[in-house]
Amino acid sequence: MRRDMKDESGITLVEAMIAILIMLVGLVGMAQVLAFSVIASKTYGRDATKTTAAARDKMEELTGLAFTDVTTDVTVNPPFPATGTGLSAGGSVAPSTPVNCYVDYLDEAGARIEAGAASYTRQWQVINESASLKRIIVSAASNRSFDYGVAPSTTIVTLKTP
Image 1 (cartoon, rainbow, N blue to C red):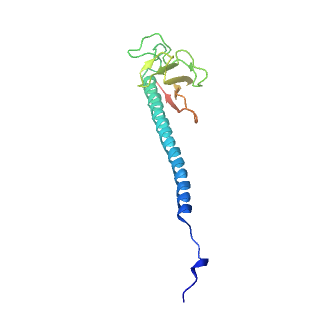
Image 2: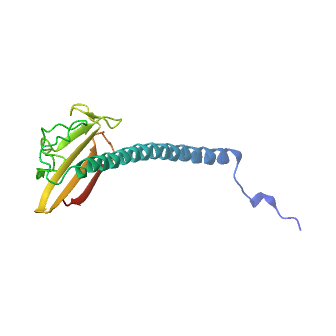
Image 3: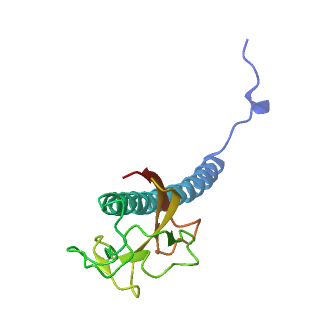
């Protein structure tokens, strides 16, 4: 019961080596994409975390002011001088239109700096909802360049009463 082996065929060593080479090229390409995505995700996550912390810090500064405060300058480092707008109605959180006295800039470490080389921008808006209610909106955005996607930003809203 011996069968003739001449009609049996399989793959040769050369064919196996070519198949392994093709798979290797595909796996190396996938590894590069994976490495890039990990680095991009880490950078985006770090900046998203910092924008959230910056927005929260500014909100704490603003909610710490007295309801009737219209002179404290919260665009500079504490102690805050009485040369600003405090909780006066005004400002804007639209990134393209920062309003003077309602914007400040942060470096990579989160320290206030001049606008020139800022890593993060914080803007806020105060809206008088009624005589006893103010809405405060704070937006923080990363100024870093993201080649793939939009730079992270965070917006926080709260209400303040006397």
